[in-house]
Length: 223
Image 1 (cartoon, one colour):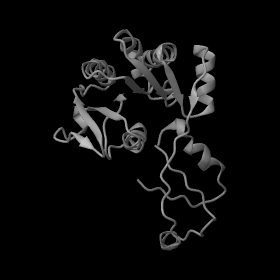
Image 2 (cartoon, one colour; image 1 turned 120 degrees about the vertical axis):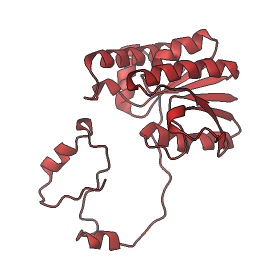
Image 3 (cartoon, helix red, strand yellow; image 1 turned 90 degrees about the vertical axis):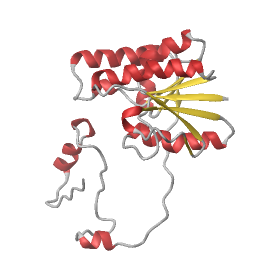
């Protein structure tokens, strides 16, 4: 089976949640016997690289303008998927989901991974939030299958689009156990007596709520 993947900036080692998700997932799918072509965005990648761990990299133009980058890139990626005779187009996130009807119109099967209601992020204005909601709705209506990463997202899809989805939690490769506590000792932290929070410094991650609830005067921030 030939799987064409959009929308990610690219792989490997490009910052971003979806980028990390794709970097871990698609080499495994290649090992299972499928062909995977992943569309990258030209501003973020070394365009000399054509493969990574069996995944084919298709470098597709994306404008630097933030407001146009996603929709232009996804549109071009869908056309490239048709050109390469993809069996499945796997679209990540609800913004690019606006292009799900186009992919279906071109005769391809569509899988959407809904990573969450991006319109709840405070960085988006009113117009952008409405576009994201439209993307969520169109992808929910036109995709052949929908993957969600939490039961909360599954409930949103059921309510807004009237259909069920496939709940697949994000996984991580298990690191080797390490009993060395020198890193903690250097910071005067007692093992098993601390809270670790890893997130972007944006309001929707709720780090301010966490800090407000902690009854401690010691907070360590690493950039």
